Length: 230
Image (cartoon, rainbow, N blue to C red; front, side):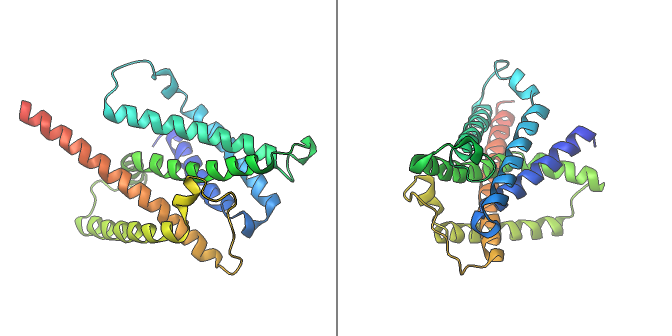
């Protein structure tokens, strides 16, 4: 495996972990939340620098449905992270407090909205690249061919994660936060930190699974159409 590929995987993994941790701002405290948030943005910038070649190909080649979808998700994620960064500076009470900015309610609303859309879009983005990630993991672990029983077991686990992810989405009222039904993310101080992270990991797993298998079905359908035309 190339060093750049390994670096991309490590950076992406750390970004996912950071995204989950900064969402638990009340658990880690505001200062840690802001410092980790800055780290997340910096890694996001590094991620784009490492993948800058993608921008050079935007106006080249033919766009099919899958490429349009990939491009749309990537662009929406970029806009969301930029909104997250700007709103974070506006409402900062620690890292950027010296700027003496007052984002007010609008700044907090944008930050909350960008946080949850960023989380969902990052999960979808991960699902779009899940096949490539698994391929890289096989190369890293020198696993030439997947074991059938292991594959079935992993699919069952993925299904269970997705089912719990649906339940957790309703419990955490993710849908309401995606449309800004609430201006504030009310925090239950009696909740367990473990349950919080399990819930959001499973919600992420839900979007990864749905995206990955829908794209597989789409690709299989396209391949079947090509085979029938030959």
